[in-house]
Image (cartoon, rainbow, N blue to C red; front, side):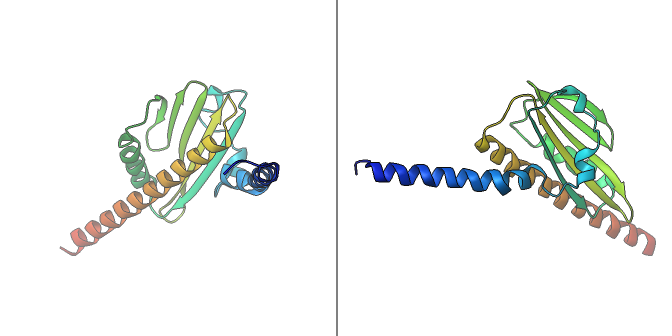
Length: 170
């Protein structure tokens, strides 16, 4: 089917409309998925590695497990990632992991909350602009990773709780 002027105009209009929707709502939502204004405004370890970022994205999740369980899950998930070709530049055991490579920093921060809960915050800072496709891919990968950390940490916490009850009863 040959491209006619009408088909080209429709295709261009669809592309412009799609990008407009992405820019108006989706981009800002995914750049701050579950992260509060306070989360985004906080200074975090690793921020100094990319001093003039073109891109800053914050994502967060509250996990029903203490930081020790979440930290164990973070270590399992990060170690299991075969595509991790970055340098670990800062580790504050049980609280922070900062990775850095070629003008991009990625921080994973744990904050203890009341009631055996933990706030997991991820911040990506890039010195270079990222294409919309790259940003969507990063969002999907980090969201999947955060959900996996959440599931592993909550499972580990429930196992520890069951073992504590069993040892107390026995």
